[in-house]
Length: 356
Image 1: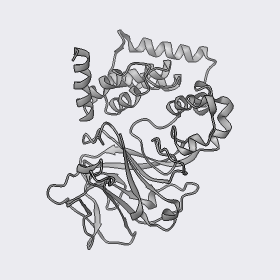
Image 2: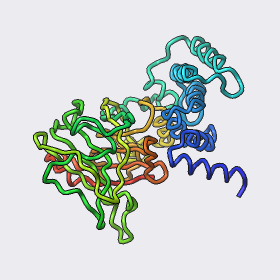
Image 3: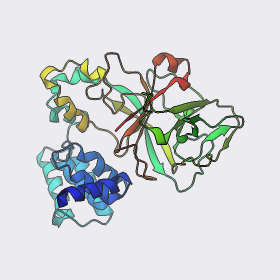
Image 4: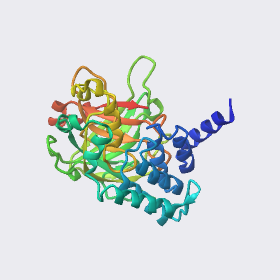
């Protein structure tokens, strides 16, 4: 094994454990032309690694590491890096990079067109803009914030921590062991979005973390979704012995528009022909909040190959740095539910899929 391979293997291991510096170096190891680089660099930046923040400034200014060209976004990252105490990037003063970016923005004619229009232009799909936008779906993007203590109000939306269960509830089990609590979603906190019926109460999501790939008999990964009614008296319950408790993060909902995932049924239905591969570029340039992607409803951030329309995305949980939570190789958890089961509040029928 060459020293380069040894380095990549070492930083990959550190990245999977949530080390910001390792996440940055693992991301850049893919090369500045690879879209695989951007998510890792974003994770490192979200964890406060200054060099990653500076790199995102350059990436969005010049369209490298899988980022689209968005000079104002690049300027914002450069300013954020300077505010964090960074002084240089790529051997030059960071202030000089910022000055060049501002000059490039000025030469471009001032404020850019809106990010969506720019994303279509960058992907050379302007002619397909109307039909792609017709396939948009609103989603609830959950913005996570790490908490030192599990002290959120009972029933609040959160990742990890201890679940708030009704007094008579039984802790979910699978494969002979208690499952791990992944998330709680307060349904009353959901913003109103088209096509999603309002519901009350909370949803609690559990997984068998030691069996994420399913069993050798072909059964999928085990999970449980509990619906706790709004009026139920609940208690914050400590996990049974031997069951992992993930560090808590609060979740704040915002509405974010989504377009179909690459190669999904909805994407194929767009009939893009020879321009199909360009759609992947559009997805990478699509404007969205930075950081980990936790989501309910809308289009999930995963290829979902099927001859039938995709089910409804009940919850997507990304790998995240707080508590070093990695679902395999920086994968994501997806709970899918049929529209009929969602309408009837049969949340227990939601099916878990794990994508690495």
